[in-house]
Length: 327
Ligand SMILES: C[S@@+](CC[C@H](N)C(=O)[O-])C[C@H]1O[C@@H](n2cnc3c(N)ncnc32)[C@H](O)[C@@H]1O
Image (cartoon, rainbow, N blue to C red; front, side, top):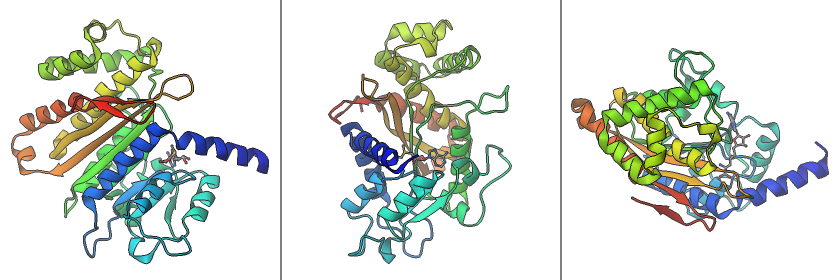
């Protein structure tokens, strides 16, 4: 890319990133960091692990709110050196974020490498293990929900990474933590994957009729009936329906996959935004994981309670950045 083209691309990225919907999402992320601020004395675990991108606007928000201190020359102050760690795979973005925030810890790698792939038998070690125990993990992914490469298992790399994050936070001393997950809000799944998602949702409606009722009241009977009779074609739906499918499916599957780890899980935000003519459709959620005795002793009730919060936090962020949700 030539210098001029790169500069123009940066301006476009900046304009896109400053949008009110995204600013509202960054405010939500900062709220999560606030819950864990200030860091415990002597702790080596960062507060915030992020895909900050080249511009680091989420880090800037933390600076503005006083969770990250800068020196007069703009570099990260020593006191804040362990508050935030950025992950980045793109060489241009790495250079730019380091230029904007000198002294910022940047792990220059792909998330798949950080998590040591999708295998349930390989885990990060050393400093990668420590950063994976960050109190707030923000996976702001510019990609759709993709299926794992190993079939016929019904699995998604990003959900396998979240399972690993759960296990790592459970290590002694177990730490409460929070996941912020953003995905492109479309479901361009083939027939095979679509069928399995519909079957999965139907099984879960059968398991928890309150979950089904909450989905019906939020997305409407027609969609739920089409899911139940297997007729819904996710890829052919209007984007608003594709986003709703993600709202029902993503937190549900995470709660399901991590239930055996004994967390008390709540969905704090479950939101769709964008999807109009000039805005890409997006999906974002925030889930909290708390260490809980009850979760271990009453797993079924605990799981049902996790499901209850999913649709009560379902909503949208409008083009002005206002959040409209039931909860
Ligand atoms: C959507 S941008 C982040 C925007 C930022 N969170 C904000 O608030 O403006 C995502 C960034 O993560 C990087 N990224 C995406 N997927 C990644 C992966 N699997 N591993 C490492 N970096 C990744 C991209 O290169 C990009 O710079």
